[in-house]
Length: 275
Image 1: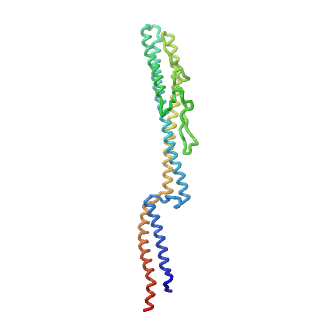
Image 2: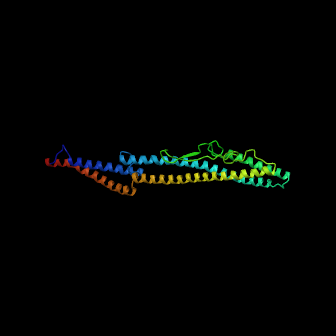
Image 3: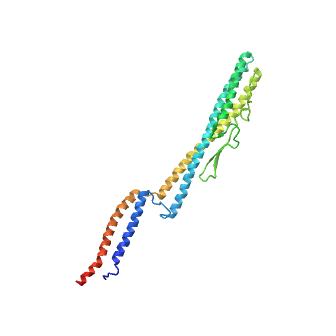
């Protein structure tokens, strides 16, 4: 039945064209953003999961920075400890030479001057072994250094401090140590040997701590990469597929416009009945 009050054909054609335009807009948005799920409106559940994963990724960036900071602090302490070890070995050589009872006083005095210069160098090393305001070997840091271990900050990694100051629990050699006799020099040799044993144990702990921080940093990096890949799998658009769909919808849109035009011409055919 032909009628001029209701053009059902045009209504159907318009509905189809509107649907095509809506789909076309969606495809263009995916191509522009590269995302199949750009907002919660696209897919609320997937968007919520992706946002949670993005939060973790950003959290792991902070974890990586914290681990880098802690590892650098430990590495500075480790380098300083190794330098102290080298100095102690030189000091032992001087003291051992001075422990020779056949050595004359002038020679022993010269050795003692060298010994004291090396001794004071340890103080200099200890006081300058600082990174970002933290010194792990001068006894000022009693809780070591900690780094974030996970994205929500609930876990951490800690490397303990090691007091390597002269006269401390590790380097027991006194800060004023010197010798004027063979016996005093011999006693100092024993102190240095004990200090070296303690120092080597401290260096081993620093080395283990630095390695642990590095391993965890590598793990966090891989975990962050895996999360980013997972986010991409959830929300990224298949651009090749969307490009093909874009061409299809553009053709469909043109056909829809033509169909609507044809449907709008139908009422005019009623005039033919009155000629």
